[in-house]
Image 1 (cartoon, one colour):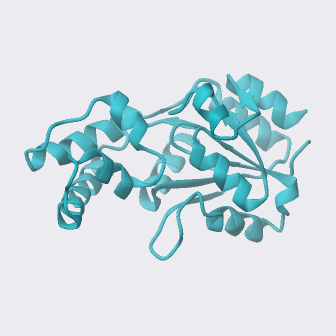
Image 2: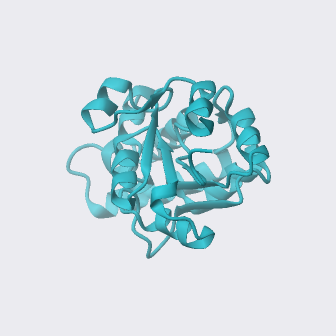
Image 3: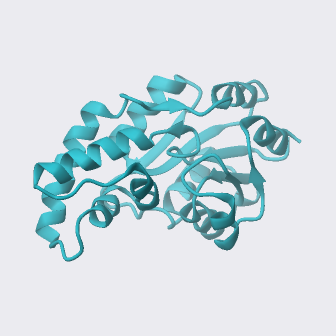
Length: 216
């Protein structure tokens, strides 16, 4: 095995969560009379946590109070609807099984709300992901390396033996800040040209190709 642990982003990497995120965003916006956003717009807004998602989705000039009100509605709606359309990307479950069979620890580090991270990982992946960390109070979000380093501390594995797999510029910076390798997947929320311009240089176009990179 090339790596002793594989740490994954969640949204846009393991799970296609975009429609549910867009639906909850638009529910929050419409609750206060704001214009709705397209799925393509929401795709651009995600990656830095839900507060930043809502801040970007609101009209320019929204106050901190406006953001908080909409964020609270988003969180409540998403807690009830985060599984409506979400599903693993093609080949992901088999990839996780192959890594598990090979004895490679698997973890998730996400900027998604921690409660949703736990719910979705458990529902779609069962016991395949023993360590999953989402956004929590008092912990700096990606691209700060805190949560990745927490995973490595728990497992006793050094950054040099770890790889972070993600789909965004935030993930590239997170890996750089944590001192791990990074592999960018091209099926998520950012395309390869954008990822390349953001410093990515190793790309996987399918779960099968990613497996070859991780197991080779």
